[in-house]
Length: 547
Ligand SMILES: Cc1cc2nc3c(=O)[nH]c(=O)nc-3n(C[C@H](O)[C@H](O)[C@H](O)COP(=O)(O)OP(=O)(O)OC[C@H]3O[C@@H](n4cnc5c(N)ncnc54)[C@H](O)[C@@H]3O)c2cc1C
Image (tube, rainbow, N blue to C red):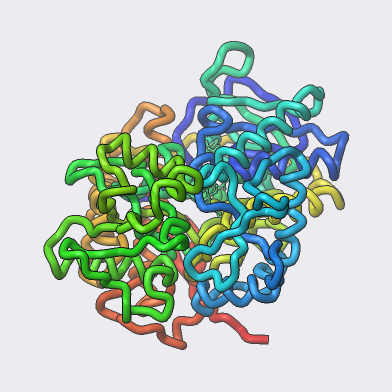
């Protein structure tokens, strides 16, 4: 039985604010900065469960996509995004992304983000898989996320000198507080700190913005950091919100293979390396992407990830290779210093050697369903960044559109709040009957199960095994409410939701690949919307209606 609320001790303290933003990646921090511009007098509380720069944002390598170069336009960017999204993007959301994107990048530059430039001055733009134009702005070669995060956190520190902005690290959002008629009244937070807000407390607020990032930790091989446990999706579902497109998990085709026992976050070899000329080869040196797709090694991510998996299955190898020797030492040192350092740290020199690579869970295209202004189906609840499903990515995200999505939709949420904050409401009386908190020991078997049965290649039988395995893991209850147990319970809820919609979608589309339904089906051109009710998870199919 999946709990509708997490078991937590009664709140020991109370804080009052106007807006709570949960998460300090590109989405959360941009939202805070934008709300401060839109509503200078509003009180904002930014809560983040680890330290400020711990999230996917600082690991982003390739860059930020925006039509900033000569010969490019938002219209071209729109077309490439729609092609990658395999019929499921919301064109209105994509239009907002591509037309507001260039301004969002310029705003980031305005607060001090230093992107790489050509010797003559303009931004140095590169290409990545699925982009037909050079439109990826990058920083520090391949350290874009670190620079974006640095610039945003510097701006936050500057803004933080005001009494209206409270930033709390090591503060884990547990559950939303709701009024009797289902409006957001705030949330419960667990704070590991010293002072008046230690332990579990209640924050009363007029609006909550979830910017909690992705859920890569549902899988054993992932590029995501340990904080990416899908908390935002889980707590939104428990509050009655809709989630959409959860079956579309993007696997990055090329992370560094660290041996058969590697676990957790694995170093990513950005596809910008292929953009600059590296190619995938098998152990005999044969280029296996040629002839599989018009763009060969630069085909969309899912095409490349699946081709690698098939190559591995047919050859019995546990990895393939990326040959980047043709790039030369100078290109490696100046354009890809981070990847070069990671490879060398693990004993591989890409200047002279082949790089062993495998696919790993990388990006959640789906999430908490929002409208074009970041509003979820629960009044007062907003979602932004990877935790949200704005309709921008459809069945498959186009590379480097995610940092951009965080930047653009954060501004949209702030603009919406700027037009008027929701009314303050009182939370319903506390209901202590919830149970269903899970033993943190379920996390490891859950991750293995998900990678083996609900990963890059899926089938009805495999997914049924995943569902049965998750049901069994769901019986390992735990009665000690703490951060590990709350996150284990969130991972289990998100994994169960992913498997339920992956089972339901009997076709292959975008990053959802069914071995038993190998083709795209017009009947399935639509979205699976998941909710959590008193009888468990439920999904409804909403077809795409063409204008
Ligand atoms: C290795 C790697 C490379 C990538 N490269 C690129 C790229 O080149 N270009 C691109 O566009 N995208 C890239 N991406 C994707 C992109 O980085 C992410 O989608 C984006 O940074 C997500 O930003 P976010 O703000 O939504 O989430 P994150 O940056 O993940 O931030 C989430 C925040 O929420 C906090 N949090 C989570 N749960 C809770 C909770 N319960 N309570 C309180 N706080 C919580 C976390 O601690 C964190 O602060 C990459 C991702 C990875 C992992």
